[in-house]
Image (cartoon, rainbow, N blue to C red; front, top):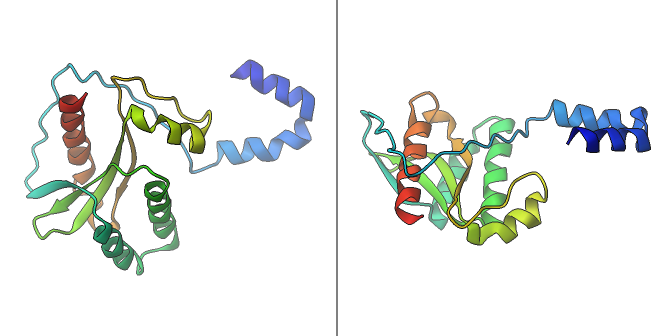
Length: 166
């Protein structure tokens, strides 16, 4: 990676590379790839709030967009990114709902069968999945539910689901 960057820097010159470098370093777009062996036990998370896990339905998108109309612009952009991600063919989105059926957070489980979409939309930014791997991606907690611990619970639930399926 460093060698490739030096070659590009030499060919384009520092003046032409600085805007790109600035954009990459100070971007909100960060990827963190964490590996987890699914053969190891998945710790049970103690959570006092009653919840349900389900795959997102078409009507859920309308519910979320109504909630976010009163949110700040940054939150609305985050939501739109997830919606476009879904419409691009990444359909394995799971939502965690509270006891009243309100969506608290969402997370995608991406399977190796979706590698073509990964290649199409992310090119070299993300690694393609092997047959025994899944990728948990695009976690989003609705503003009203931030700080309650829904995200770790959703992640744990999807890891358990992945363990059963892979």
